[in-house]
Image 1 (cartoon, rainbow, N blue to C red):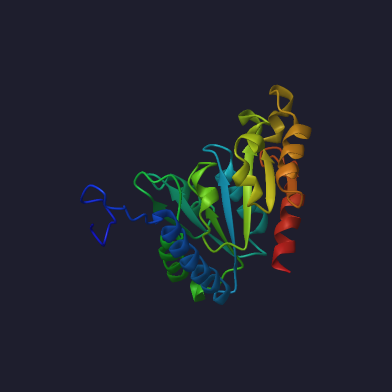
Image 2: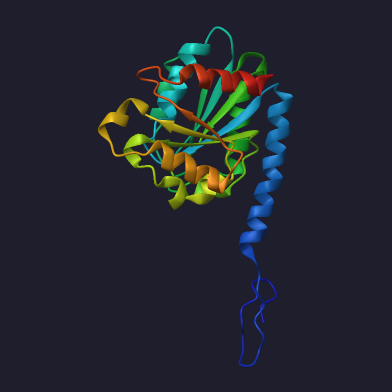
Length: 233
């Protein structure tokens, strides 16, 4: 038997089982805790945003930049498989942003975010921020499994996606602090049950907060800003 990989080398030899996933997750958790402490030393709180592609995470951050540019300092760590498109959109609002490209991986992990925090720290004057937003790769599955060092986790579902998403992707909601229903201005045009979405989310996570917002129309943006203000107190 190979002592390193645990493979079976002969008939009658008992295989050795190694839980690789457990080891990987434990290593990720350790780096995640380091990230959290690093963010706190910068004077900031970290918010991990997860959603399907196109749910409106970047649009919400653009609107947040417009609303808070004179009162709250924040930076963004952008996660995507390829391109710097989202980071460019954030920078165009005058907000420091670091792009992390995974090259195919469907989520950010704590190690990638660790590098992103250092990059962000270097481009921010004095290395001090109030909030670090981590915009995860668009996916409701894999990102839910990886702790990045965040203080808060936000899960977002847009109206065109359908109100069944909490039931279909439970882990994303069980592990989140806030459920954002985005693109609320489209509610009159889609068969989206706000009641179903909230009920399913709270069945999974009774303590989850819920916001219904539309950066385009401004609906719910005051409550979103109040939520961020509450985190900073």
